[in-house]
Length: 613
Ligand code: GLC
Image (cartoon, rainbow, N blue to C red):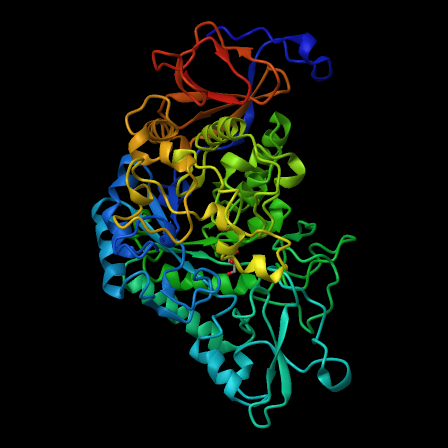
């Protein structure tokens, strides 16, 4: 293949190499055969995917009936956000019974049927585990409220005496991630007078558990077994970096966000000195003690498919995936050491700058950190907590951070939808070429944008109220899926009801409007996933390619014994010519009139996969 002449005029700083050339291996191929190291996992947000009973809120039978969509798309597994019994103050991330399905979503039999059908279709099922806090409706918390200070019932949560005169001030200055204080005061059950305070890092209805209490450990290990026995393939672990708090609960006056930043002394031990170089680690996040919890859970999972047994089958591995908003990457990689979790969302990637240098740096740093512990990287661009990437990538960089509940409202500048979609498609085409695992969020395969003009009175995210309407929160990425452009509620159900209204733009993006349409986002995702599977890119080795201008991200991925792909992403300001004899496998940019990808130039904000056979 002849490669294009780099244009020295466009980039005097970066001294392009005379010839494009493969760089040393940045990430080696994986031959373990473990499904989760390269799986593409699709996040279903049960409230908003498919609604069988027509009440306007999605449900498990609705999901089961639509699983074929995931087979046609070509993913390997699905992750379900919580469907457990809950008063739904945080959309089910406030669990009242970890072993029951909320009536809104169906029954335990419906959950069993969903898992069985998914398995029939060759899809694995990951469910959500919420161990940092329960709902305030959970029997444990109700017992704690009825029991006196110092009782064993209260010792499952973080109850403390207040400070100041008569304990009228909270025990410390921690803030809730959703806004406001992280402490609430409860009456003394004997006198009815104001009594102790309890900690809630999120909503007042989400009391934090005390993970120094062995009962809490025993309960969650039993919950793991309950669902593993029902056949689930793994767990996404909510707020995995938050379970253990620094002893003494010291004050933390810094702005509260979900993210823990620190530095790593890289000595690999748990002596507590990691992160002490000038910056203190937030006392509620990423404490070293969390790792013992995950080691214990890994042992539980391993009993279902013992790794050292002669008949160990990697296809039967059950997995844990951490939601840990932790940086830098080596700190996050501690969650996926060999005896801990299998995956941890790569949120640094989700927040990476939209520049070739920024993308390259985060990709290289991700492999360096994860390869050092023998774990796969787990790429992700969207989920139910962040602005959808088809909108986020059109925002200026300062507003792109995904670090906590945020959102957009009607008074914000309207993001450029075409720019956002173009970049989102290019970003996904980068991500799905990368070796490792990747998570997709429902609707991104349609290019759905964030709903940015929800009426304020319909907002449901507790953030909206807890910040006194200072942050819109996450409702805009949680709007129900459009399945059929001409149907009521765009086919979300037959009744036309929808717990959040769908924007008019969703009609043209509905599944049935994109199926079989060359160049549609849905068909782009299908093609990317098919090529990724055929060429086993998820288990391939990755090398960067030098010789392009610094505005082009260029890398080659190749699995042993398979043809590879050369990925070029143009994150600059001018189109670039493609190599004269390039064979385009798939391109993110809109196709030419005959439906074929343009084989001669790569437009700005475009990614192309070229055959590297
Ligand atoms: C996680 C969830 C988020 C939830 C929070 C509290 O960040 O992804 O949706 O609000 O935890 O459980």
